[in-house]
Length: 377
Ligand SMILES: Nc1nc2c(ncn2[C@@H]2O[C@H](COP(=O)(O)OP(=O)(O)OP(=O)(O)O)[C@@H](O)[C@H]2O)c(=O)[nH]1
Ligand SMILES: [Mg+2]
Image (tube, rainbow, N blue to C red):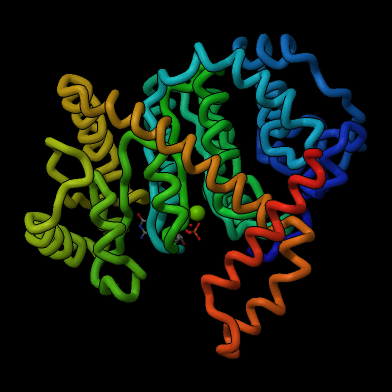
């Protein structure tokens, strides 16, 4: 992970997202997805029309798919309307994939597992898209560097598409982009979407909200505290998968599996009618990989028959509306100059004990509302 800076990410800067900058390299710079030879000058590109994006995505054109996702990830206000039009046109073709979230602490083996599972699925004729939700990833660092080396085989597989996490911004912004990217991948014909997220808090909840099946990867014998795993995260999971069950670690993995299976009996399941269990696997030897996929398919069949699968999708869409509204209002409030000018002093007064919190909040909200009304007329 010491090659930071070798990957051009210029299109990720706010100004680089303009029409002039082009979108080659960066996110598209994974093996097999580069638009030109390494180091070649980035071609200037115009934006495509809605019809061109839609037709390209529907025909599975890799380069247009990448450009559509870049458009969705753009923070430039000018791109938003176009991106939304493209999404709207693609919406009838979405929803067909099995969406699987994969989480676990750094180093637990998420990327290695995805490489093994994804390759197996691609070899079986599936088309697999791998997305990442990592709010901590920035322009020069982030999972792309590790994943470039750890998903080498999968990245070159003709049936696979790997897209690193959108960079920068709040978790809300990253999650929205990933969710829309997921839809675009479905419209492009990918029938399995794997969403990797690093297991450090809120991002798991965001990913749980966009997938059908949620898989928690764990290490044997590391201790739950060490793994930063709270009971709440285990309760989100449809399966616990103990990784690296090979060599000397195999016996410990089996013991951990038995321990977790005992503990899981006392927890509420994440999905109605489905019993969350612990499994083991080794991404190195391949043991347990086909087995966990069989469980995920069994989950899909069972919850489809019971109606739980479709109901979760509907609930997720409904929740997403409220999440986006809240994100939007929060951003608008905190980025408004009327708020930014007053907030530090008001906050200080509350901390000093000279201003009641309710008064502080009222003052800020009133200042915000007045400022908006002045603009709106
Ligand atoms: N022995 C063994 N080692 C493994 C296995 N899977 C992964 N590893 C090793 O564990 C280390 C971390 O694996 P990654 O797949 O990068 O883990 P990750 O969870 O994606 O890590 P982050 O992306 O940093 O959060 C690497 O050195 C892998 O080679 C396995 O099944 N067996
Ligand atoms: Mg990883």
